[in-house]
Image 1 (cartoon, rainbow, N blue to C red):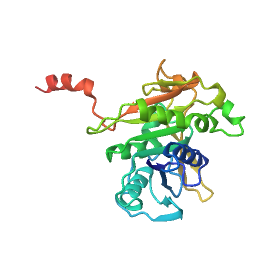
Image 2 (image 1 turned 135 degrees about the horizontal axis):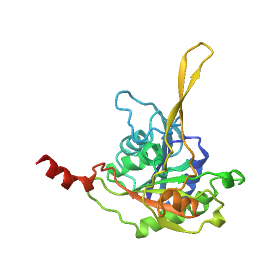
Image 3 (image 1 turned 120 degrees about the vertical axis):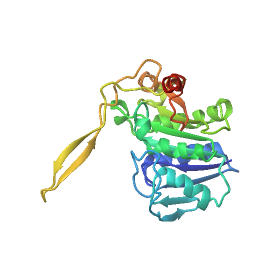
Image 4 (image 1 turned 30 degrees about the vertical axis):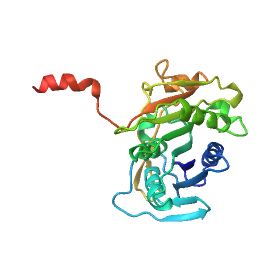
Length: 261
């Protein structure tokens, strides 16, 4: 199996090392693991691509490259330049430092990388490690992902649904913010919504007198509706959310057609 790996925390991120270990375990001795990751952190860039300017790419080691672009850029670079059209069998994106559950998934470069792979017709999984008070006390905050990651990927490859249509499925996986031994299993979960948690801005005046704005986030440990991703994670389970890039509100189409008639 040929696996292409990327992330949004950057080529030197510890979570990328975890994902490369997972990928090597899945690929096996006869397989190939290729890494194309952002040269610098790209958290929060979503599914953006560097459409209006070029990006530099550099070989860091055998089958390991850094690109000055987003995770989606890295997928394009990996498929069409690094691999010279020899398409990967699977794309893995992560392991992100912090959860990409609920509304975070919409901003996530980790999810954006998996989404681009799906748009390219390649099976893809995004993986993120929820952090919290308990992971702060662990020698390895990525312990849950490191221990259980390969099993999750294998389960999805063996049992998951992988369709071949337009806007094909990909998967968003979040590991709970606990020690690996306390993980209670895996659960399929819808994307949740954290009530009263929004991104905002905080003004800051620089020494030169110029005004800058810092983006601020909200509390990450507010539970979402029962059975959705954050609630499942906070209950000790690995959440697995099937996703598509199709943004159409299909539940509204029929009513809208009547209203416009």
